[in-house]
Each structure stands twice: as C-alpha cells, then as structure tokens.
Image (cartoon, rainbow, N blue to C red):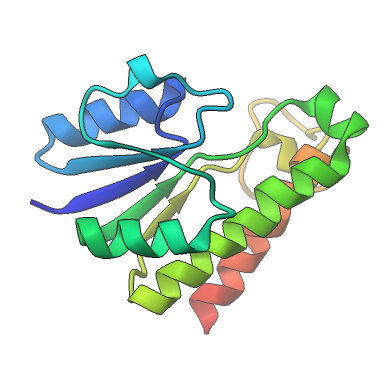
Length: 158
C-alpha cells in the first residue's frame, strides 16, 4: 500500500484528504505540529507530531514509513496576521517548505501536491479566477504561496 505524507493533515482540508486517500487504498501519514490542527481529526493513519523545521524528524518519517508522495497543506494562512507578522509567514511557508523539499530530494521522493491559494493572484481581474490571470499578491501570505509555486517550477525543471 502506497504511503502518502500529508503535512498539515490534522486541519480541516488535510483530515478530509487523509480520509479520501484511505478510502482509495492509500495509507495516509499525517505530519502536523498541531498549532492549528487537531489530534482528534486524525483518524485514517498515524499522526507524527512535529514541525517542518525539524529536518531530522522528517528524514526519519520518510525512512520509517517508506513515503512515496507528499500532499503539502502545512502553512500559516491568515491574511491579516501575515500583514502584522510577515517574518513568521515567510519562515513557516517558505523556509519550512524548502526543508520539506530538500528532504524529499535527499530520499528520492519526487511526487508532491502543493496547496497554494487564490491569495497568490491578489486582486483578481475576474471572478471566478482563471489560472492564466496575472499573479500579483497584495499580502505576505499570498506572496509566500506564489514564491513556492515558482520554486516548485524550477525544482521540476532541475
């Protein structure tokens, strides 16, 4: 059974993703620091309580569970808060995502689904937002998500 690491898997979207993966024949492995997630929401696979800043723990999780893919939800996600504390948002959403990507490269896991945000578009030209619209974020949260989108493009090219 393929094992999928779900970062931020104790949150609303992450827990429902774990449920769906489990029902589809995958084994979800939830990785969450529980800063906004909930232990009670993890019902479809093991919970590894930890932070993406802990690269040694990440390496152990990939090795111990033989992870084959990642779904990355772990992020700070409040726009107003990002305006007051941009450093925290860039550290968690950018630096910690690079920690995850670097460990994935080390262990040879190449499959990732990244949860971005419509905040990467800023003020949309039209609604619904089309993916070909310009991405011009107007807050640190949106900027952090766009930065990782761009980085993932170049990781994929390499």
